[in-house]
Image 1 (cartoon, helix red, strand yellow):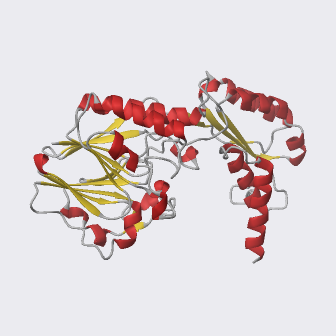
Image 2: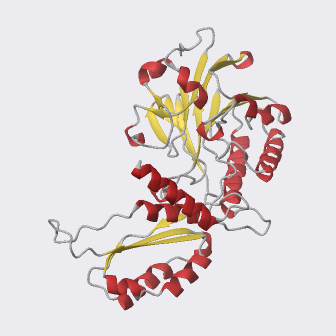
Length: 380
């Protein structure tokens, strides 16, 4: 028996305020493109079961266009692959009240052979495959200590699908807002396979337990994901073999090596920026970050910001971090000044500039209100 495990699709994700010719946000279209590629590859593999381990959508209320296109892609997929699809909710689909309903429920109505587990821990059995799947959505993690999470011995194959932060994954320290999953709660070694969702990097936790990773780069700090392969897992139960299937469509991210401007003039800094950008062919296809540190305060004022604006207009997204030299700081062992850290408001401005706000919200007013709120919190 073969299982496909994918998670953290984040359909409907938007960023950078760039629109495609069809009127979709460019990053929203990127995620849909990656999803289509994943479905095409899955249909070729023809698995017996498909588990989507949470965060199928980026928001509890995605746009109508994202919902419509997702349904159409799944309907096309259903013509090629009949494997049952098990979806569990992640933290991104979480709604504030039960009355609001969960967007994933629509798939049970419009796509054949789909089961959705929204809030409570629930077992799904597939008699024809002699398989039990115990589903723990993000909303069910609050009950995990009281629940008894054990394999069903009446079935040959026992799968645990769960969305959250697993304590036995050191890389996850401080990652996101997923609830902590203790090994004592799930008894990892007892299961034939555990399909984790929440962490966006493909990670083997044990020979029977994996984070599949995301299908695109959608975390707040995408620079950490720049070199991570995106895709999904296919697991062979007879061979006990896991294979990560990488996707080719995810948008490329380039994090240029830091430039030390300690002894550089503004002219030389401008030249270095030009040199690094000229190395990138088809700049309009990439998301790029460049960091220039130890910049002289005088040189900071003389940098060619007009040219930087042109670069920003060309790339899907271009972030230039200019870190000013601190002449008053103490020297480290390498005789290099310790840099000023960015202030909270600087980070806030950068993040707000990247993400697409809801229609009708004034970006400057939103930023001002956010700063007033943070100031009030710090003073309180």
